Length: 456
Ligand SMILES: *[C@@H]1O[C@H](CO)[C@@H](O)[C@H](O)[C@H]1NC(C)=O
Ligand SMILES: *[C@@H]1O[C@H](CO)[C@@H](O)[C@H](O)[C@H]1NC(C)=O
Ligand SMILES: *[C@@H]1O[C@H](CO)[C@@H](O)[C@H](O)[C@H]1NC(C)=O
Ligand SMILES: *[C@@H]1O[C@H](CO)[C@@H](O)[C@H](O)[C@H]1NC(C)=O
Ligand SMILES: *[C@@H]1O[C@H](CO)[C@@H](O)[C@H](O)[C@H]1NC(C)=O
Ligand SMILES: *[C@@H]1O[C@H](CO)[C@@H](O)[C@H](O)[C@H]1NC(C)=O
Ligand SMILES: *[C@@H]1O[C@H](CO)[C@@H](O)[C@H](O)[C@H]1NC(C)=O
Ligand SMILES: *[C@@H]1O[C@H](CO)[C@@H](O)[C@H](O)[C@H]1NC(C)=O
Ligand SMILES: *[C@@H]1O[C@H](CO)[C@@H](O)[C@H](O)[C@H]1NC(C)=O
Image (cartoon, rainbow, N blue to C red):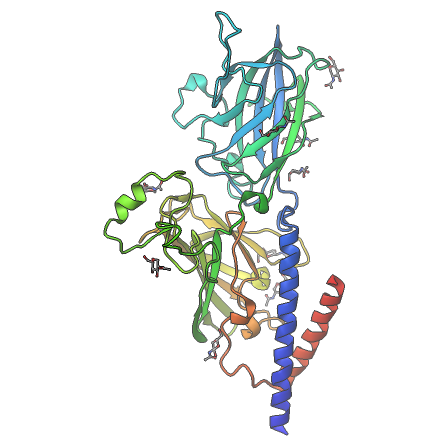
């Protein structure tokens, strides 16, 4: 009799794990097909605002500000570049806090030469240490913009342009078109400029409010699909209850190929490591990774470390395998159902990303300033670690069926590839369960099939 029940339990458990697998696969495919829309940051965007501050005899002076309204996606060195196409025959007479990358053909101007005569100028930020008389507020950070959650005070970047050859009133001026934002690679798509209510500015002493003569906004949104075809990050798993270390799926971010692409990765034991790393590649922002089976620049490891009566503990390690990148202001977004009862986090900052939603399961984690906010290039220092302490909710907590592992992880806003769910470390003797768990399995199957039906 007992044998009978166990074997039923066994086959039902198997079935239910297939059902869970199915659901996971379904949600994965849904996730990839709508990647331009980020369900964890649905409103996320970069808004570019042009404030016309004064009209000039042949144009205007405007302050252009980019606000990063994304919760966890930032722009790191070498920074943003912003391009557009002029609607008429405009030129840029001068700039502060930024510059165009090319001047273009200004030969039709005698005497006073403009800063840029191109029809499609490309603007970049100035570097830190720019002389004060060329700076404006929020400029000169080498194009670095922090994310809204991590550092709202540094989530904007500004420059000033003096434009000639344009309209000189709010009726005659034509808005620039075809905005492009690179950060520094592709990924952002910008909409058309729209005239909005003029911005109001409050003086520092709060005693007077002034306003722009005219304002227009451009909104740019990010899509990981546009940004790159291959992933850049993967997840590995381990637990105290099983010796298996589930490593990142092989070839997640590329394959080692010594025949067709010699030097596609670097062997850490190579005696000439330093010179290989320093040799300037074709594109020095292309990652140069350590040879691993996954070939990803970033690996996030989730270790289920300890089990207490009322709590359980996880250790997270982020490892950098890229010899060409120090990740400044890195961040991680992690989805796990127990984040609604996170009790303590060591040596990382934490913010709940969905604090008011019915399912409060998503956390943003990032480094502590001057301690571990820099994830150093590949090598002995190229990792950061933290431990999380969760309070068990008796109704949901289990080490069974991979529940203790994360559902989704982003590094710097890009999705990290997880191992397949059937490879997760198992609980020892996971097949012999009490009747309660049999009931649980049946419920799970029911719930899963309802979900599958809903998706279908
Ligand atoms: C851009 O983000 C801001 C701040 O979250 C939001 O108010 C605005 O609606 C967003 N714009 C678009 C077009 O999504
Ligand atoms: C242009 O300026 C006039 C006042 O000079 C104002 O009434 C009008 O609303 C402005 N139009 C726009 C589009 O800003
Ligand atoms: C918009 O910009 C892109 C890239 O700079 C260019 O390829 C395209 O032709 C431009 N479109 C128009 C209508 O100017
Ligand atoms: C225009 O951009 C500014 C700053 O990003 C924002 O505060 C404002 O709400 C935007 N206006 C519209 C209509 O989107
Ligand atoms: C490529 O080189 C790495 C290290 O140099 C080595 O471990 C790996 O086996 C090689 N792969 C092939 C296909 O030769
Ligand atoms: C990373 O930072 C270290 C220490 O500041 C520096 O020596 C190294 O050159 C940097 N690496 C890169 C790729 O920028
Ligand atoms: C969500 O979780 C965070 C962290 O545990 C907590 O501070 C917050 O109050 C929770 N929100 C709700 C609505 O439960
Ligand atoms: C876990 O969090 C949820 C929602 O915030 C709360 O209702 C529940 O009581 C918490 N459980 C424990 C054991 O603290
Ligand atoms: C550990 O988990 C693996 C699956 O990743 C499983 O094959 C193995 O049997 C488990 N070990 C024990 C002792 O349960």
